[in-house]
Image 1 (cartoon, rainbow, N blue to C red):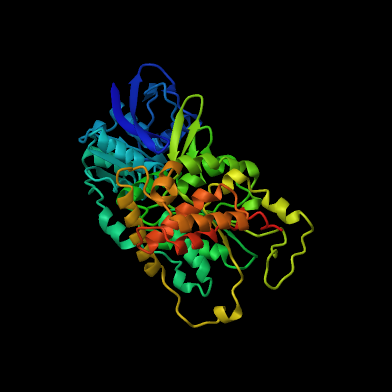
Image 2 (image 1 turned 60 degrees about the horizontal axis):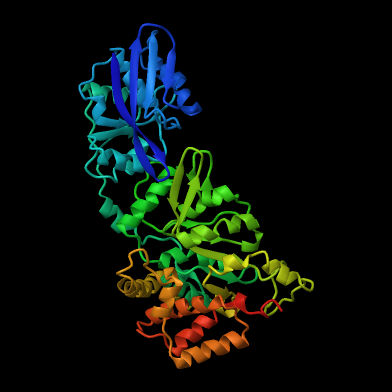
Length: 513
């Protein structure tokens, strides 16, 4: 006799359907075919223990489990529950009123028949709906995540026995319904960190507002304790709210990586990822024998913050250059090639020198001759070329810290950012792949960022006197276009250019003395 149901396998951020077939015939032994990995093969022991604990038995006959398509490698422990149910049906220990073939069934079994949560539920639920399945049966802790997908019955169960009773028709389980739009609307701007808590640093707040408005990358240079990390953590609170499509994309990536947590649903706030400087290449960009998303993909539609940038290994920083340009990561293996989206804003911070006090208004730098330049040279020119704003952060004075004057809130700043982004959306309406000034290719910069004779004269003088490199030219024009958008100006004016020029600190030839 043969029993059949369906599961799902995740490759990249998308899923494909896996057909699970179990046949019981004369003979002995348990066989599993279809390129299962070690975790899948071990399901025999978990399934057998769960069946015995629930009052059932593993057939003492030849049991063949086939995972199709047979040429695609299967990994993980999420096939335990469908295999157990198929074994029970095909050995005629249960009689199913509801057909196993109408559902996608996923779940890891513990030895006492309880179910543990699994990874990658959202892409699997999306694929199940696309394939016209009636519903999905999975651990209760994963149900809110799957319920993001509408027109699909999401049945959450805590134990194998609950799943058995559901398919036998002895237990009715109401499909979980989640009002995605309601959750999204109530939490989309719910951030704990707010700019109203920051005293002083008005010039840095302005720079971060420009960064958010144009989708630019930025680096903050300043001594320890100046507030670089505190300010960076508040950047997501002034970014435009996620659209529902962006929220789904972001949730899929976190689901595949197993970062959602139990009973989690839609991610409605922009991610903020801050990896430690000891991170490896694969952990940052993604990889592994079964490729998993890295930190730059987990920061998709949000902010990747690299604190103490020169302390990161040079190879780690170099592998990030291509994703910064292409806004996606392609990982190739012998059997597969997967693609993870990585459209993030890079915000970095660094000390100006190893001791941290170069250019400090009060403390003296104790670094020897040439040490400052050597420290800065840890960051390659091509990486700096992809960072639009270089912002110098100075320590906050006692008067500013102790001031009782209320600072501008994130909500007020966000309104200006949203208005500037709206102007960019209108500007790039014929180029759907471009939606912020930072994404403009060089040929478009010349067309959109036109400046008058006075502006050209100012830019020429700035490049000559400050010793700015040629790579700063396009960056200054992009940033000045964003400043003009914040000012609701159609043209780039002299004051917009002048402000943009001051955000190129590290391009000055004499910056490191």
